[in-house]
Image (spheres, rainbow, N blue to C red):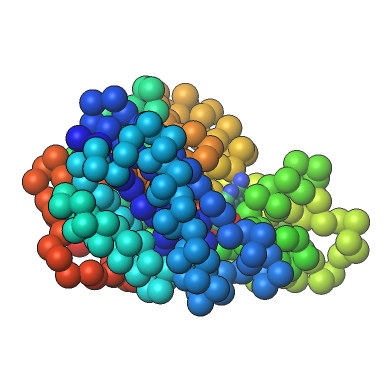
Length: 333
Ligand code: KG4
Ligand code: ZN
């Protein structure tokens, strides 16, 4: 089954074709980073309009790169939520309409389920069950995954997401958008032991996170220090987030007795996080699985793949075009 996947939930337009027999055939991505840079973040109306400009050309491109024509596709998968309503509507309208025109089924995909399954596109995919750490701009969750569609949220953020904390602190440091990547680059040139940032909620039991205090602490340290301290601040800040995430992942493995940890979402591209998770799982006799860097952040491949699994299990969308800007992973069947 050849599935076209469309991703438009935030500030990246992605399209991909996944074939249940041959794997990923092609994927293309356009990021609005340059467009949004001068605003320092996502402007929903601008994001929606840019998706309108980019979605059809990207779909044409990915079909061509896969060496197919539109009528050889078997289904269309599109991100229906969570995300920005206007942005989601572009992908949903395009996907649902193309499927109707081609006379093939369509399926509405949960963006975070896409992230969560992205590591399964790699050559050595994780087996079920596993613990997933979802770390993106909008989510920081530990999820117990028994099988596709069976998601129990073990821990969640009480305020900011990890990516949001990276982005807000990057902004305070005067770095460009998207901030997480820029902050991580600056951190590479700094010393992580110069400033001590809090490790939120590590002293308390449970698997929840809280990152807003960390951002406040960063704001104070930034205003009290010269700009020459910026790389050290970035490194110290990154170390605090990474240690917090790694400790909670260790705790999740221990409390469930699971031996596999799967990382997903934009912050999963962070190099320090990847390194420290690798050494943590060695100590725990467990294994960690990462999507390739480009499939940590938003992309169409994960949507085509998640959509394909949903379709193979018999699911499909009716003709109504619906999006779900707020949609919890544990509401999925
Ligand atoms: O998954 P994603 O592309 O979009 C959402 O669904 O939110 O994640 C984007 C988030 C942003 O907050 C971005 O700053 C962060 O992931 N991010 C990083 C890195 N690359 C992306 N944060 C830290 N280090 C990175 N290397
Ligand atoms: Zn995402």
